[in-house]
Length: 222
Image (cartoon, rainbow, N blue to C red; front, side, top):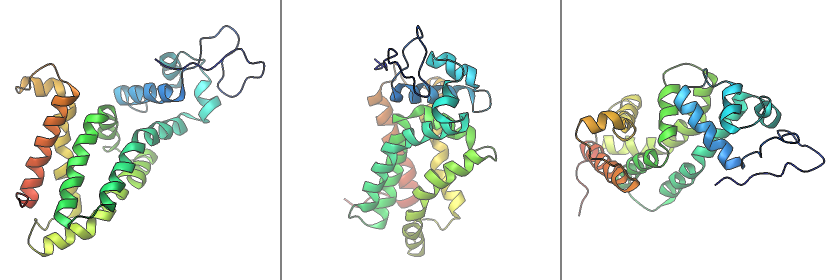
């Protein structure tokens, strides 16, 4: 349940409702509902009015608190990426060889898709068009993920331990199968059992990661 902010204070800050208005949801709830809207409708169709309706606030709430819809979108993305960035850095800092690190990053990518399925839908929409939002995602998500792995991938390819393919081909070879974790209506038609739970999704994520990593790197040594 969201923790409501008080509306009885004499001084109203940006985004606070007036007397008689419904309580403003907590920041985490605002960002969660924002992610739902952007993932379901796309950026262009997510109007300030629609966001206000979903949040139960006045139509000028987003501009008052965040300055613009674009700033709100960035806040939503930053919130969704916070845990991912911490976990990714832990993998990069861990003591492991190149193949183990690449495999660990692939596993992490699919597990993160299970934890934040709406973010996966947002990415799928934004990756297909040129925009400042794509620049933001590339600079804050794609490049920081791939950059530290490039030397490891190049060493593995030079040693003949994985295919020597351009980085864009490798990226799409790994990212495209995430559809199997977020496109559930099709997955059910292909035989995935219902109901879907976090546990069953994590199992699917690890099976998918094993399939892709083994195709790229071969079976890990026992």
